[in-house]
Length: 369
Ligand SMILES: Nc1nc2c(ncn2[C@@H]2O[C@H](COP(=O)(O)OP(=O)(O)OP(=O)(O)O)[C@@H](O)[C@H]2O)c(=O)[nH]1
Ligand SMILES: [Mg+2]
Ligand SMILES: [Zn+2]
Ligand SMILES: [Zn+2]
Image (tube, rainbow, N blue to C red):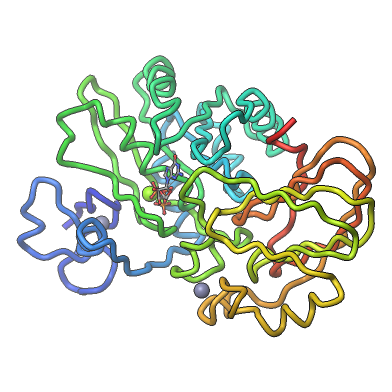
């Protein structure tokens, strides 16, 4: 057998149940064969985690990108910094790249799209990505998808359209949106789920009119919090609804716990608002700095869950990082995979506690005047 699962791209096999690509004879005979894992995911929402090493990832993507392609580089707007695939910059120079900035539906109404687009262009340049065009969109709401379709129609010029990106940014969801107008594929869908690592290999689909779209697996990272918590805790940190900004008027000597995953100490500065943008379901707790250590020790994994005991092995200990800002423009302190805290532009000195290898990133405030 050399066929791949039409949902996740894993090579199909009938020998090893429970492993990647396992399929029964009956299922194999279907028009669009689905492996057992995809079948379960589709019908019961269950998933058996399957790891993919960075090497396997690169091999899979390089094989697809061995001919000139129109690359759709998908990024998650909620976690742009966590969305950059390290080490692909060189390969991408041989292709035309369009950036698909997904999950815009999570941003509060009134978010200035121009500002988002400018920030994306700056970040792309900084990452040495040569991006021909950027589209701000949402695979969930459909916003921007028509615009993307027209861009692809004009730019593809017979080349395959290959979507790449980190795990969970919404690559497969986006392709499903793009192809949904093509009736002939009503029976085939790229498999999606809220678990990172859903797509396991390249899946190509030829559309009427000659266009070919290719889904690829996503890379799992260690620098995003979403790749470090367990699958149960993932539900607590991934935003499902539009972000509801939570504003705290703080004075020095206070601290904010972002559940038990991060802590932002306000060490010094005039009273000022801190606006937290994290998943609405995530607990944000304000307390006095003098009580913070004790509360942290006592309540982490209890009141402050996530993390749960299953996450701990991957999180390691928290590290404190000093950050200071002089009076000026408002900034966001971004915690990859968890969200960000908007500072109002006052003088401020912080201690930001994060799990090892999760590095805070600073950018001009994306939302708000
Ligand atoms: N809020 C929001 N969620 C989205 C959007 N697009 C996809 N998602 C969600 O993001 C999660 C991942 O979607 P997938 O399409 O499976 O992502 P992927 O990039 O293909 O993931 P891998 O195959 O694991 O690399 C799912 O829970 C989707 O419902 C979007 O536009 N907005
Ligand atoms: Mg996928
Ligand atoms: Zn499958
Ligand atoms: Zn957990």
